[in-house]
Length: 109
Image (cartoon, rainbow, N blue to C red; front, top):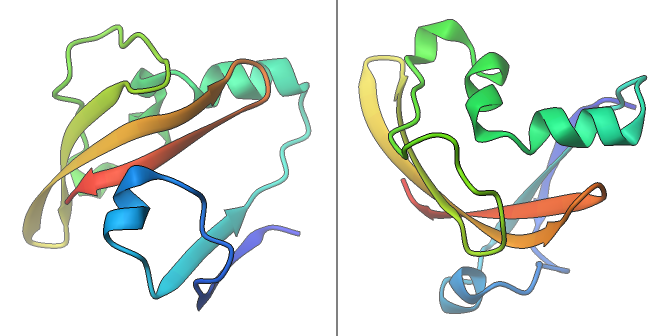
C-alpha cells in the first residue's frame, strides 16, 4: 500500500552519520511499482533521474558531474527550493547491492 509514516526511531540503519547524530524519528516511505525489479532498480539508481521524481517547482538540479559512478561511498550534491527557501543537499550511498537495493544517507542539507 503506497504511503509513508513518521515513527519514533527504533531500528535505525547502521550508518556512520546516524551513529554520530542519532535520529529521534524515522520517515519510511513505500511505493509499489508494477514493473520488473531490474527495470525499476535501473531507473532509481541513476542520479540523473532524481529530477524526474522531484516536483518542477523545487528547482532541482545535480551539481555533481554526470554520469555518477553509483557505488558505496558515492556522494551527490544538489540544490533545490522548498517554497522560497533555497537549500543545498548532500547525500552519500551507504549500501550498494546492484539489482537489489541501495541506501543513501543525508550528509548535509
